[in-house]
Image: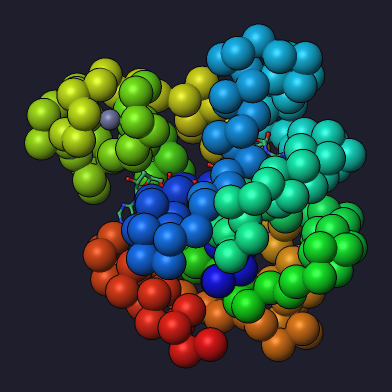
Length: 215
Ligand code: ADP
Ligand code: ADP
Ligand code: ZN
């Protein structure tokens, strides 16, 4: 299964990715997670990415594309992958097409998670992430049963620097102008599926898995 999760910040891509990659036994490739990992490790790429991330802007295409190309050539992607947060511009989507044709594979489906815009900021601002295992929670919509600790591994939960109301609003604007055109891009290729992301987490998961299995 080679698939992409599309959707604005806070739509639930990371949350749904956790379930889908388990179901299909494929790696979860989140460019946001990759940048945050680089940042934590203090790599040159992480330092460069940070200035864009904290302003809610996109990291330049060439940096992102090189990082993803490298990742897709990894052996664990041989039987498929789930891309989350990539591509985010038409240039990135075109570059991905080139990379995939070089490898000799194609995308099965692109899932667009649609969410009522009023919910997005609430979702992102209330997001909490486990420092240890990366699991995602929400203070109101999906709280950890262990409070400020992760219910899976007891790690402490943190809030991303860019999950402030101001930065999230900026990211939603950037999504609308830069990433939304990809909906059309993949629709024209005949591989787009639209899923109602306003539903509870488990319902959205069931819908996405069903859509992916229709292939
Ligand atoms: P994205 O990766 O698209 O930015 P996340 O998966 O991190 O989004 O979800 C954003 C926040 O919203 C998280 O705190 C998550 O727990 C919560 N969330 C995700 N999906 C739903 C849903 N269907 N209903 C309510 N809250 C959700
Ligand atoms: P969300 O799904 O909540 O928007 P991500 O974790 O996917 O957040 O991304 C966080 C930040 O990382 C983005 O705001 C952007 O600065 C950077 N980023 C992640 N993926 C890309 C990408 N494909 N192209 C450019 N910048 C990216
Ligand atoms: Zn954890």
